[in-house]
Length: 377
Image (cartoon, rainbow, N blue to C red; front, top):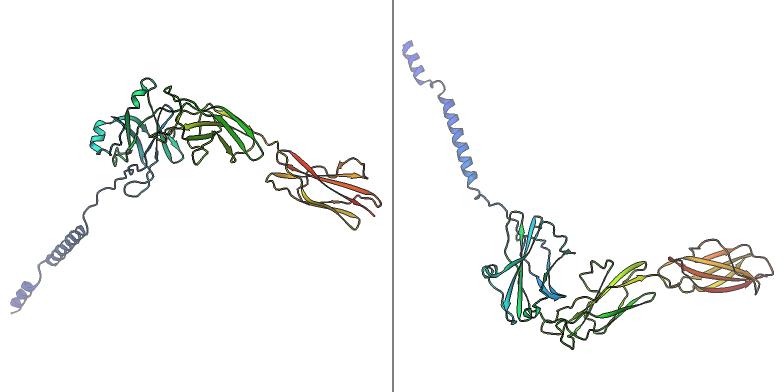
C-alpha cells in the first residue's frame, strides 16, 4: 500500500526540466511573433537622393563678340532640401540653320544633337556674380556673317557629387545680328551730388553697314577696369547719349563703359563696351552757410546760436570774432566746434563785437560765413 501510493505519486510528478523547457519554448515563440509583427509595420525605405532642381531661368543675350548666358545658381534639390553637393555644371549648345523660333526639343534629342561647350566643376566662383551664374560663348570673328543666318540653342544641367542629375532645364534660343560699334568720346562732368557721363553715338555696325541699329544704351560702372560690373546702372534703356550718376561715393575712382543695344529682331543684342572712362570723385564742394545765426547777451556773456546747413557730411564749425567795425577776424576757439552754439565769456563793456561762423565738412572744405554782431553796454 505504501509502495503503491509512492509509485502513484512518482508517476504524477513532472519529469525533471519539463516545465523549464516549456517556458523557454513559449518565450522563443513570443519573440519570433514579436519580430514578425514588427517587420509588418512598413516596407524598407529607399535612400534619399539629393539632386539639384533643373534650371528655370536660363537666358541668352548677344553681347560683344559672343553670347552671354545667365542662370540662377541652384539652391534647392528636387525634394525641396537645400543644395549642398553641387559638383558639376554642364552647358550645351546646338547650332541650327535658319532664324525662325524653334520649339523646345525633347531632352534625348537635345543631348544627341548638342555639343558640350562648358564643363564647370567644383569651383564656380569664376562664373558666379551674386546668385547668378554667367557663362560666355564666343562667336568666331572670322565668318561671323554665317552666324547671322543661324540660331543658337542652349541648355544647362546640374550634377551632384554622386554624378546624379535631374536633367536639362529650360532651353534658351538666340539669333545673332550685326551689332553697332561701341560709343566713343566718353566725357564726364562732376558736381557735388552727381557725375554726368556723355558720349558720341556710333554711326555704323560691326559688319560695316551704315545707320547703326541703336535702340538705346546701357552704362556700367566698376572700381576695376579689368572686371566691369555685370549689371548696368540704368534700369531702363537710355535713349539719349548721356547719364547722370547720383549713387557714387567720394574719394573713389570709377570706371564707366557704355554699350549700345541694337533695335532688331533680337532687341537685347548688345554691342562691345566702349573704352573705360576713369572718373576720380573728389569732394571739393564746401557746405552752405549756417542758418539763423545770432548773438545774445546774457549776464555779461555772449551766447552764439545757429542752425546746421542741409548737407550730410558736416564735421563741425569754426567761430571767428573781431572787435570794432574794422577789426580783423580771429578764431574764437581752436579746433572745430561740434555743437550748434558757443559761449564768449571774454567780452568787455562798451565794445562792439562781430562774429562769424563757418561750417566745415568731413573733407576739410570750409563754407561761406554767417555773420552777427552785438554791442556790449
